[in-house]
Amino acid sequence: MKKNKNLIISFVFIFIVFSGCGRKAMPFVPKNETIPKPENLKVVFENEKHTLFFDYKGSADYFILELSKTQCKSCPDSFIKIAEIEGERNYHVFSFFGEGQYKLKLTAVKNKIKSESALKEVEIQ
Image (tube, rainbow, N blue to C red):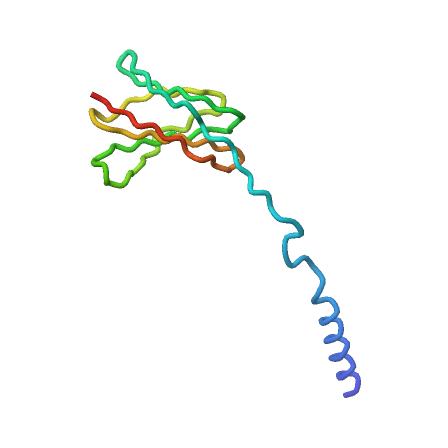
């Protein structure tokens, strides 16, 4: 009986001593990394196709291009992803879905971190 009591006391002592070991939280504050957003979005119409040109300071893995057709001024935008552009390119050729007001949204992505989006409004006639 005394052996069992000593075994239980030893186990409780070891549990109390070693329960404080180990990392409970991150030892540093993680960086809030940001990357620059694309700038100077410009749409050019040539040979029945539209080409989006843009400037980007820095490097990105790729860019996400989204398009929304504007129904009315107070209507919410519903963007559709239309392309992933390689990080080395600063243009993309595409077509719109007919006449009307459109909004383009371009976002840079690097190491799974997204930049602030650049917006461009375009009217197609």
